[in-house]
Length: 65
Image (cartoon, helix red, strand yellow):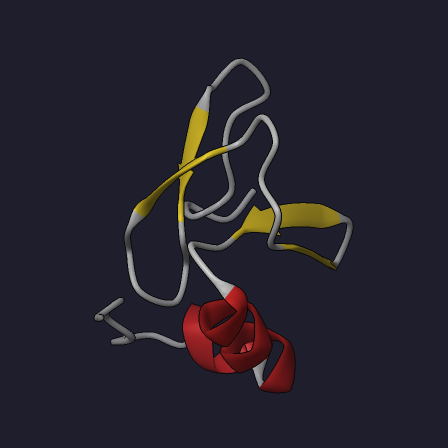
């Protein structure tokens, strides 16, 4: 499991693009990638992720706003 993906018992997850904490329940911006659900603070971060998800998982990538 990727470190940005939430554990099954967590209430929040970190947006993998910007690093903000997102409440899982009722999250409006989510994306599935390689069988894992990721949660985003907003539409822009979701679209950035979906455009190039491997960039987020590349060594040296640092989430930033």
